[in-house]
Length: 353
Ligand code: F6P
Image (cartoon, rainbow, N blue to C red; front, side):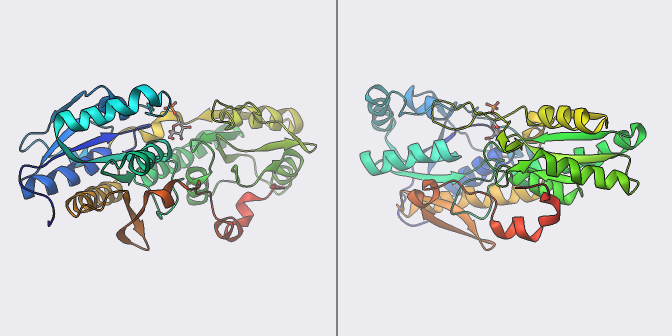
């Protein structure tokens, strides 16, 4: 590791919602830095910990076994320095000065990485990003860690729900997380052979969806399992039924999609339909092996970027290789399901407008 001096102090934070693999990323980062003789301070609760200088230095051996654990030992929050920039940006600079930080790794999704990018651009802060989110919506990386664990959880749930759906001749309408993208829903839905998949990237007309289900019933199908993204855009007679409410950032407020779909199917087809919101189960518990290794690799890559003073970069996965990109590329846009994926698995998305 060139560039970094023995005894250099670096920081790390985990921002946004937790995702399986965060501890493995901290482990990959910390082990690599300690091997070099550098030190690592973990800040609690995302950016809030840097703003309030709420952090502590990791000790030797503290990373042992961490790779297996879900959640994050640092805690996380959606705090951002730019909600109250006049007050909080100077406080971040002060934490850097007080602690003598040579650099900081921000592990997070869009919000956390956007703040990191801005602090680097506007304040020349020596930051490096590591993308994480179960939603897999960060651009410039093929995948984010946590995503495949969430897909695994959702797939298992969809698989298991078949038996009860069959026993009662019901439709189980299963809502998956993902905020404004349908990555988890689409991957789990295809993997579990869901009878229909509803994602934000392809708006759905209820008439079409009901025709599809009615057609299945006419061919002898007595039960079904549907995968519905929390942000699915559902229309009836051309009118958008799902939430039109927007949050303070102008984004649609997600949720309630499964209940809406189940209620409409039952009313229209007289086919008993039950909604189930998988919720936080999708990001709870230990990461699957892929996410452990993937997150370890990204953490180690971030250590290398720090040591080479390549700030303003983000560790990422491209075509199977761990490489790096500019933070600006990562936060420029939200990564939605590709048209290619939607076309390839078109039959699952039938009912789409
Ligand atoms: O961004 C990750 C995520 O789990 C989304 O899929 C979901 O919409 C949201 O966070 C839930 O946020 P919270 O944990 O604050 O309810």
